[in-house]
Image (cartoon, rainbow, N blue to C red; front, side, top):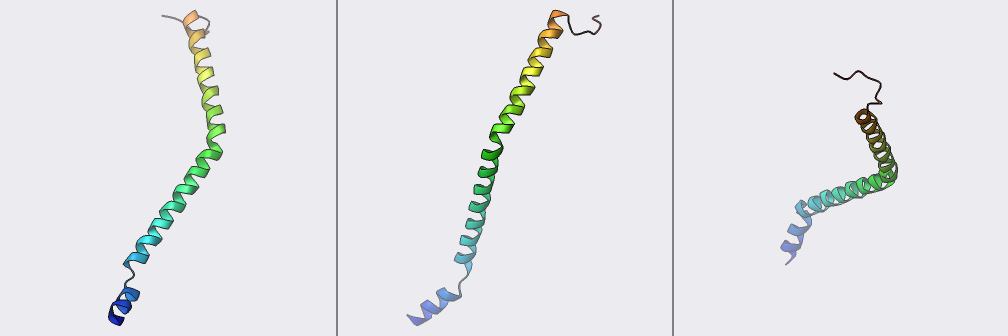
Length: 70
């Protein structure tokens, strides 16, 4: 019985796997936090870009683009 306990105490494979799991979980939490924090500003950036592209497309289709047409 004591040999089994000593063997289990020396075995570090399980501890290493747990450490890697904790590191992966920490990275995931940090990534989710960063995406959540930047989510609102990113949405605003894409909304603005989409609006400007739609305006430019409408102007180009109506001939008000200011460029020459072939």
